Length: 267
Image 1 (cartoon, rainbow, N blue to C red):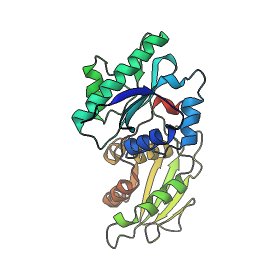
Image 2 (cartoon, rainbow, N blue to C red):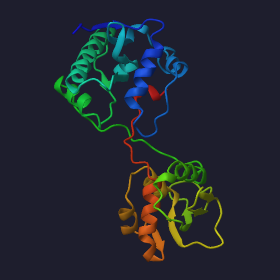
Image 3 (cartoon, helix red, strand yellow):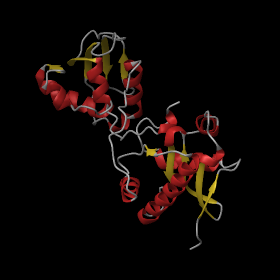
């Protein structure tokens, strides 16, 4: 096998780095495909950033991974090609870390910090093997601007997951919770093909869900379970016999992928 080499960024590398990033992180919640224009803006055009801060490992001109050292020793991005074997990914992560540490020393940074997905055991283990300690990441705050549009979009996307013959109707009553106000205090959901979601109380519904927008946000983004919400009284189903129907609805709208936001997303 030909040996890899480590080098710094050259003009024209952007497309390969963006393609690698998109392959590596497409499976995470909140993922939005990177573009070359966005990558240039959040990396190369960041104040104080240098092309020498972008370290790339390649083999025969094929980019296998890269890391970007940002201000204050924060690693803005770290990515290794997912199809590689676990031992190879681990070795490449170690090599990129070593290069980033060398760049940090040259800049006079006293320490460096990574923000990596906790669900990637290869990267986490490779960093721990180099002596890094693990700390809880920054709190990720999710806000729903338009719950009607979001629920409609999710249900339309997941129509093929509806149980056969499943056509219930729901009435969601939403207090503001931690929000300043609830833009849609009443929401009607009618399961069908297509599903109908409207920002008003329905004339009638099979089941009513009383909760608040904060709890709904936590359910959709998988921070709390339906059992936890009903057990604490934060969500009430009427009639109580409709709990399983509501469970099916919440399973459909919940986004259960792990979430990841790198330091590069902060500006």
